[in-house]
Length: 264
Image (cartoon, rainbow, N blue to C red; front, side, top):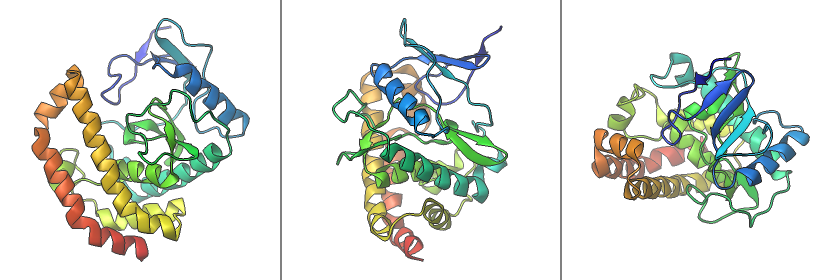
């Protein structure tokens, strides 16, 4: 059977292969820890995450292939629609409910790259970007790529997911992926309602969104310091630190609108 190269994000670009019902990809340092959690998650009844196949070997891991549609650039119109956004909010809530009831070792070697700086009692995905959601029949059905999962607060994962799916980007940056026309406050309202965000977390979310953006900026800085080619090329082509300065200024300016949307 021929290998099929799966495209998506920057971190594992060109290194993720599909062989029939199995996906083979680079295994991070905590692969065995993640695999144990994914198996426990499935045993608890959550089918929206891949089940590991065997044990990591030779720096590679195998997981089951989850059938469905995954949006990659240039994003198709269906991935930008409100139905898709609402379904992502509902899937995130199902994931959080399942994660909260699945035991895990908080002291294990979970990634700190995009982790909640305040920690938490459940495992967050931390990277529910457009390319890490599997859709079936137009609705979000599963999450993939748990490399950056770590203990955190549910509202942290909500903020990280909102960054990608609203998207929480200034118009200039959003235009790079043909998303400048999307109405961020309205979409935040839809997303929060679909998730069932509590009043306390609605109050906290704008601050957590600012926190999450700062953590993502630090993540990029570490990748640049390590001279990772894919990140360096993308950073240089997309405007460097001026782009991040613009984004953080925009989020600050938008805060009153976001707060109003979360209260409506």
